[in-house]
Length: 268
Image (tube, rainbow, N blue to C red; front, top):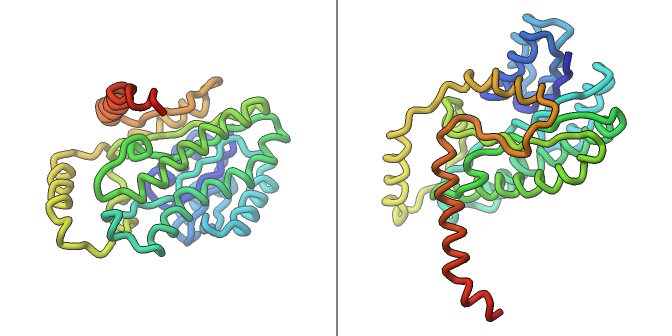
């Protein structure tokens, strides 16, 4: 039996993974901004579920929620930083408020949860932190500049974190999904006020998106359960095969560019 702490458990990956963990007999502290959305979990699984109201941008609230979960269940085995959303729009269009809100949720939220959970994980000498990143944490795309920024920052922070906490028996995995059928680009999304000058860029992105068939997010549940049961989990794990050619091309282009300009770099 494992004890999970999952942010953003009201829908999407968070809800699917919470249900999968509970169905196999694990315990879950499930958080959401509106805890009423968690009532079906409570009705189905009773005391195995601890529903918690949580906005991950509220650091004080995060600390209290993590403490409540640890005190209720006696330990924390898997901490899933899943809460987040997509900000769609050009960099030029993005307001300061939108940019700060994106980073507050997608970067600072996982930071606050991680900091709150680590004392418990260190004390027990074990634990696994899952940081829900994205293909957009490894490659950047037009209309997603600030979302990319939040996930690239999460990737860098988590890579350092993994090295810092390994001596305590704590694992960190960046889960990097490709396109799945969640509401990430639907009800959860925020959009900038469009500037007409960028309409050709926006149209090209719409055409590319319409050509893709999102995978069923429920297919990720068994993979995530196997991941958290692995004795030596990886630092990074793609969900789905879609990210492979995209990231391989992006990294190849970076290496080619660095090498093409080595003659200039060597003069610095």
